[in-house]
Image (cartoon, rainbow, N blue to C red; front, side, top):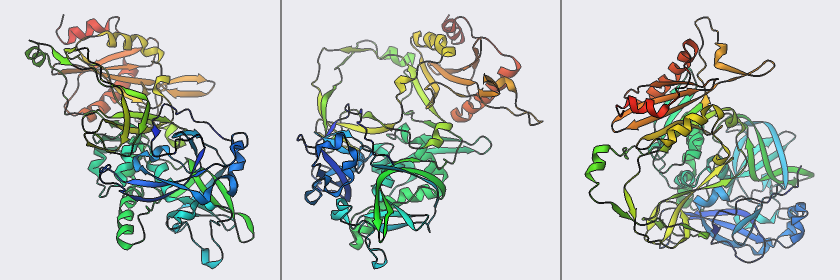
Length: 560
């Protein structure tokens, strides 16, 4: 077990307006019902009732184990606040808040559960106040008073060896498995959930295990893996659907608007969870109540994932169109900035302000994804609009809100994204530095990086080709040490000018291999063919990088 604590480096996030703003420390005890508490202020998404209690012993900062004691907080006088469900990616039971900011994330008792068998027989729904066969409460009040105002809320109970059990609040299951972004999480709570709200154009190549998706407008790329699992695994899709439908059924049946949740898979998995052991009958460690899930080993049903977040309704600026609009420069105001002391309010955001993606840093939830390639497009440069600045600087925006816009208030729409590492940590790989520098120096072209990956922000592994004899060409690999190989990395760029486009492929080698390809009409199929052709070309006739990419590109587009 582990009683350590962690202070979070997420102070850049807006403070939660609904949380207490005094100097006391407040612990998140439990999540209650989900509803629309004030339709006049919040119409686009429901809120969840968060139960908080004041920490009584400030010594927990030196000894976090104190927080396991029932008398560590004022649990009998909880403060209840409504918080939009889109805020849930930031909220975990047991975390400590002060001045509306997350201050400490104690590990409490950190446990690992190996080879859990997850299916409909071993993982069953219960209510938090269950008295098991009249033998006693699974969450006894004397040891765990923090859930007592929410005994009708749902949990999932998983069987453990030696007649023990693991209990996970359903809200935590939803937060962990679907809380990669505010936008995805919100859609689960607003039935009916349909696939087109999340993604379109799915394609799965069985041979390579590669899944491709077009994410719906407004869906964050950090949710691509979660959505990919929902497309590939029927258990994941049913689990997502059940969140909203269970709320509707609970409201109609009089059971209360408490969400139900299931695992998004069936099979064996390892879990790491923070929580507390509770007694049952004569066993002092019979029930582990989960405060927050930390890791799940169950594999995702794809080997690699490519997603597209590009808004295809926005076509590149064309030269002829630009000239027609050039007689007089457009006058623009500088966009409003966000206040460093911004507060997250429980209102609908503005219809007139651009949405901001706000990263929140955490540890990797799914070890399986660290072994898989997830990648997308990224714009490196595009033709600049001919705008003039009138010198007017609007005041900073003081408030933000999650969810879809729906008001004329000066409130910034915001989407929280749970990330494990910062993209700023990804320098340009050495074999690409010269190419990227020359591409970024080009003016008047729309340049896209098609291989923005989670691994290094720039490259993906090269296609591994198998001969008719079942042999893999060793030239596709790089030696890392004695008897250790890894695939070479490959990067693909597109360069657009007016209605024409070319692809530039660079493969990790010394010197860097580089070749130009012409695209076809089908963007997705064309990219996969380009990757396959580039691997073949690298083996058969490696071509070193041209000394002057700018001149080569201008020659291709007849600009020299």
